[in-house]
Amino acid sequence: MLARLAAPIPLACPSGRDYTHLLARRGTVGCVMTPWTNFFTVTGEAAATLAGLMFVAVTFGSKIVTPEVEGPARGTFSPIIHHFIHAFAISCVALVPGDHTWLIGSATIGVAVVRLLTLPIVYRQLRKAEELRFHIERSDWTLQVIFPLAVYLFFCVSGVGYVIGSAWAVSGIALSVFGILVLGFFAAWHLLFWMAARL
Image (cartoon, rainbow, N blue to C red; front, side):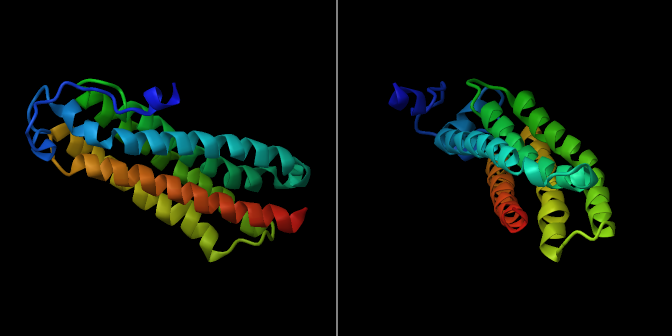
C-alpha cells in the first residue's frame, strides 16, 4: 500500500521528449513535474513530519514561555512552523496531477508574498527580544530574517518563471522548497539548544 502511494503519479506525457523543453508548450506543463514527483513527495513528507515534531517541542517548552516572553517566543517559534507548512503546501500543489500552470505558479508566488509581508513582524519581534535582554545572536537574524528574505524572493522569481514558461522554473521551485525546508530545520535545531539551556 505504501509503495503504491509513493509511486510516481502517471501523467500523460509525450514519450521520447526532453521534459525541460516542454514547459513553454501549452498542455504539457504537467509533464515537466513528473521527474520531480519523488522529490516533492519526500519534501512534503519531511515538512509534515517536522511540523508535527515542532508541536511536540512547543508542548515540552511551554513551561519556559511566560507572559513576559510570549511575544519574542512567538517570533521564534512561528517562523519555523511556517517554513515547514510552506514547504508542505508547495510540495502538495506540485503533486497535483495534470496541467495546472496557474495553480502551481500562483501558489508559489502567493505564499511567498504572504511570507514576505509577515517578515517585518518577525523583525520587530526580534528587536523587542533584544530590548528585553534576550540572547539574540547574529545567527538569529540570519536564520529568521536574511535567509528567509532571499528564499521568499527566489520563490517569487521561480513562480513567475513557471507561469511564463521558463524551463529553469521547476528547478527553481524545487530548490526554493529545499531551501525553506533546510532553513526551518536549522532554525528548529537552534531553537532546541535555546530551550535546553533554559529548562
